[in-house]
Image (cartoon, rainbow, N blue to C red):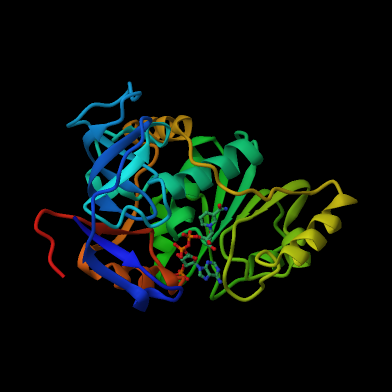
Length: 300
Ligand SMILES: NC(=O)c1ccc[n+]([C@@H]2O[C@H](COP(=O)([O-])OP(=O)(O)OC[C@H]3O[C@@H](n4cnc5c(N)ncnc54)[C@H](OP(=O)(O)O)[C@@H]3O)[C@@H](O)[C@H]2O)c1
């Protein structure tokens, strides 16, 4: 099969499209004929392991592949528990955009934030892969949602249901005097003291990775300092590593099939241009999700 292979450490330039063997599946795995991939996969079941009970060949599915990046290929091995039936109203491209970004948004808002109707929620980086899901999921939980983005994405974030949109090129949300019950920070471009100023007295901050200016999240030592700084106040810090799971996929499917959540796709790239897709995401200004499509007879 054709697959994008990485032999050495490096950026997107080390990625190579090659012929390799189809992945082996274990007894609890499903072999998926990939139709679209991001960090995730959507496609059709090709074969199932001996203990798989929920899927059979031909089923249309979506979920998280076993190995990071393992879905940039014509076939991917996926654990049965990391798959669910594809939402009926989505294309494969849309479905491949859902799992990881959906897990992060759902786990941050529902599980860690325990966001309730009427609470004031702010999503920093509201127009990105995770932010576009977070705005819609926060609205589905009944929150009053503020999205932070740049001028070109203000209309997009409003169209996702945000009650308020702050254009970060014109206004700094940490200096408006508004305070939020929950902040999901997908950008990490503010100092912790500034973020705390924008939090309500019992508010929660979930810093979600972040790769730009203020790297206090990315550094383990600084994260510990951040945790210490929250230890003596009523505000809380909700750090977590996302964990893929089937229950989340089923909840996300229900939100999608009832029209409460619609994936936003920035661009799609063919498998042979996976490195361009990765470079586009790496730029930090994706508008929703970037998806790689896989079709029969893909060429390099
Ligand atoms: N917790 C986890 O387990 C987990 C899992 C996956 C990813 N992550 C992390 O989550 C973070 C977000 O991922 P993502 O996929 O959503 O990123 P993304 O798709 O690259 O989105 C970035 C978004 O941030 C916006 N942005 C850039 N600068 C901004 C600023 N100064 N203020 C407000 N918004 C700004 C951009 O909008 P404009 O173009 O309008 O600037 C863009 O829409 C990443 O750091 C990633 O590593 C964490």
